[in-house]
Image 1 (cartoon, one colour):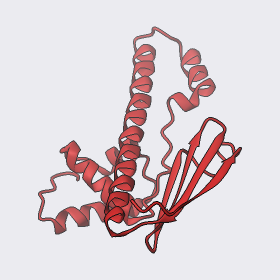
Image 2: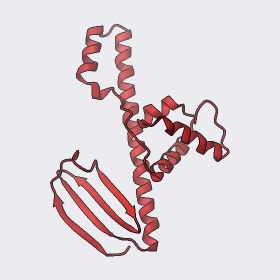
Image 3: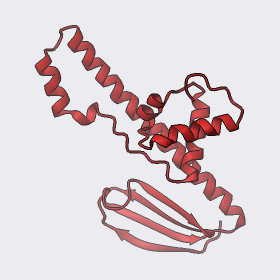
Length: 173
């Protein structure tokens, strides 16, 4: 990798200020990486040579795929917690009042927010690879719940991509 980096001093941005964890921006063979750790953001900037460009693309793709896997696991855990709560309520282990109170006081433990946008080709192709690894037929509702997808056109885009790849689509992707 080309050793032509510029290092920016640690900053003290909060996680919600700018970076959720880390950001990779690749434009015209240059990169900017910001890695959030504790209350600091470490920033790196530099130019990539031809051989390191493919490595950088691989790095960003793996980051995106990991992000989708983590999102799916977190959302499935929320769904499981909600189903457990529903089970307790339906079997009269808790009252309706206790059920509602739990949902109101701990909403973030149960609520799956549809806030994920596939704004880049890298994010889209990474999700396609994750779905290929899952190897199951998923409905639009499954995709929304697992990956928090907010864009209603995302399902159509994924469906068109799968059709263009001559794959069988039964009731979903």
